[in-house]
Image (cartoon, rainbow, N blue to C red; front, top):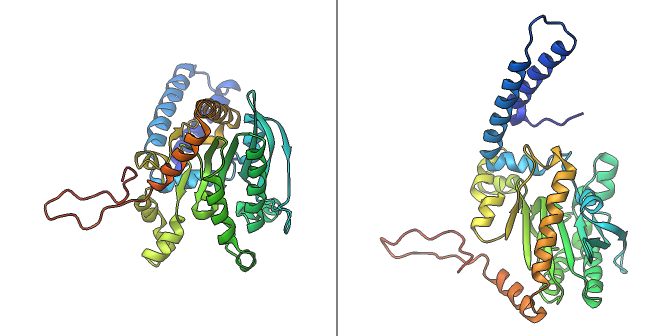
Length: 335
């Protein structure tokens, strides 16, 4: 059964009318030939869909990023990569199923792929902790990325998480330290690293596997220091202000590209990635291959230096401009 978002209803109503007309025509319940009207209605619906999805609000894009039928990391691994061999465990505590990782091939290249993984139903979501990794998940990711670095294998990370696990157990097992160590070590790996935000990119949960030479993002994904609901709770004391927070946070793919926080936006099929898993997987594969082959031409020492400088530039801002001076941007990636 198709999951329908509230804002998609006007388009869906038109599609249902078209489907009814087709059924009546096919069953010869109408004596009149409506073929021309059907073609005209199809063209009109297609035009409206393009206009509608090109002008989504930030909050509507957040809803698409969370769509339950959207492809997850394992869907991309199955379609964009070949020969995946999963590896498990952090060798300290346990295996965190919110992080999936292992050897794979991307085209002709052997790589290590690491991704956050959500569940499709209640049982799997409990198993995967709704895609929110524990400390052992970040330690597993780091162990395998270190293995990739040792054997000169490029690293690909797929990000789709609302954030790291916020529970007491995660705090007791040092979630903040696990993420911080990942940031430090990923900054130093000599092999190429590419991250792709495929859905939600929430806070430290995302950046814990996101320190990369290239950060790519799907058109309807988002990347943010806090969820819109969390921001709304803090600033407006009301989670229902999430749409206002989503707009203020500048978390959409296009906003992030303008701010210099991501390097490339990957276009999705019309209506979102959930409408064509194979199509978006092919687009992801093409983008990853193009960026990987470009990075492989760069000297490893230079690549590490550029990666470090890339993240050091982020988050700089100007405060207290002189009277009469133009207002400074809230974030100035160029410094």
